[in-house]
Every structure is written in C-alpha cells, then in structure tokens.
Length: 149
Figure (cartoon, rainbow, N blue to C red):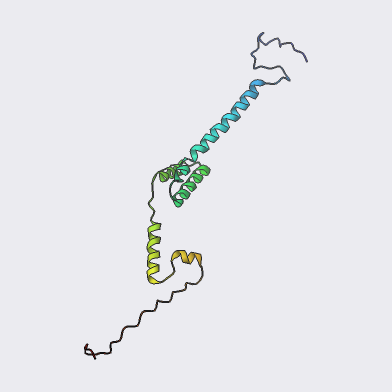
C-alpha cells in the first residue's frame, strides 16, 4: 500500500489519525473507557436504588417486603415517587401490633379450653374441644342442725 500522505493533508498528522488498515488505539481506548464507565455508573445506580431495602432489613418482615416491592416497582416503572415512598417507609418504625394480639388470643384460648393458635398450626383439622376438667363433688352434710351426734 502506498504510505505517501495525501497532497491536501497537512505535513504533521495528529497521532489519533491512523493509516488505513492500522489499529485505531484511540477508538479502542475510548470504547473500553465507556464500557467501564457505564458498568460503574450502573452499579452505583443499583446500589443507590437498593438503599431503602437495606435500611428496611432492620425492621419487621412485612415492612421490609413492602419496601422491597416499592423499590422494584420504581425500578421497572422509573417512577421515583415509589422509591421515595419506600425510603420514607424504611425510616419509619412501625410498632408491632400482632405479637400482643396473638398473646391475648392464646391466653383467651387457654382460659376457654380451646386449642391455642400454635396448637392449631401444629395439628390442623377439625377443632377438638377439650373435655372440661371434672369438678369435685360438693360435700353433703348429714347433720341438719349443726350439732354433734
């Protein structure tokens, strides 16, 4: 191939202009740089996007699942309102109402002679009512007047 410079070209060409058939190092360098930058920025985006879900791991299971669903919805819809709602929900501590209610229900079940919630989970099927405990027979007094014999 002819290595002469085109007559219209300047005498000193910049190093990023290559001869035909030669490797374009600037193009390859920029291509690798762009791929790395896109991967790094994408990773940072996903890390930032998962912040509410990581914060919600310290809360209750239901709250964590709601925050995770909000994060997924915002990821797929690109609607940032869901992400902000998930972030705010992750910051708020929701009190546990179910544990005291289950305790009250178990106590009432024990008092009434019914199986507790845990017993029903362990032994599913028809509810078998417990037989009431036999009460002692009342004492019969033979002396009517209260005096001795």
